[in-house]
Length: 342
Ligand code: ADP
Ligand code: MG
Image 1 (tube, rainbow, N blue to C red):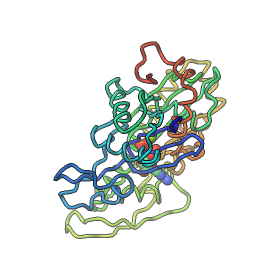
Image 2 (image 1 turned 45 degrees about the vertical axis):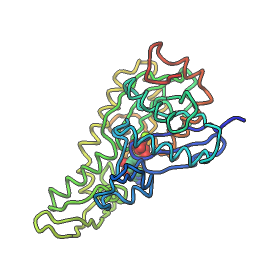
Image 3 (image 1 turned 135 degrees about the vertical axis):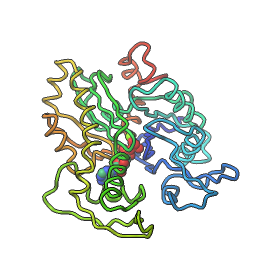
């Protein structure tokens, strides 16, 4: 019988899996806990994430993806095997057909590593690969089949990718290694500088989600952060404001806006005119940052919208892309290794 058709969003922060006919069936952090004694897997996903910063030294908690590409091949393969097994049924004899995404502009070697990892983890050969902005646009239900320009900006944990798409192909794209993780770092650095308080990555992310905003807020939100005082070395609580956080975001947000501007500057005029009419669509987890759409609208001068369920778009789009293989293949440059390979 035919196997399942699945779309995989192998992200720096989260791995999402879409199954045709069912929707998103798995969404867990890209984290693995490994026992150092024999390199055996202790936990994967949410369970492993909850161990971050809290394990004895014999257990290492690893994020095997960095900046959208594989940083630790064997751990990535183990993680994929766990997630693919979870959705395909651990004892199923039929391998699923898999479409996985990679950032636009990765090298052939990086892309091949993602394909190999999927195949080693139980995907049917060949595992197909689609570039992330294309998957994001398809998942956001943007009608990219027509000769009209659409712009999508996918902002996850490790990377922000901006692309102009027409007829299933990427016309211009740019990717910067600045996204949600950098916002967390900026919060931690700011709190350290201003309050002499050291905080962990999880705490910084909690602050961002609780009170973070790309533009100053009318209401004055505050958050009690717990960390370790740099001078006394003891635990301490400090109340920080949304204004503190908003200031800290300035540099990373400008870097992301820079990539959006650079893509627009390189967009052919006919397509640029379409984008002015249709606006820019934001996807990825960082699209959920308060007022990010308003900041982009204000700074770029083109209306900007957040897609429905922005975190799910890439996985959904990868799954749907499996049904349009020929159309996507047709839109690839002849020797373009990096968008879709077969
Ligand atoms: P990736 O594709 O890199 O795996 P995701 O698209 O899953 O990343 O997005 C993860 C990022 O989104 C993380 O940096 C996370 O902190 C951020 N994020 C999730 N929810 C929110 C929110 N409500 N506000 C701001 N950032 C958020
Ligand atoms: Mg992503």
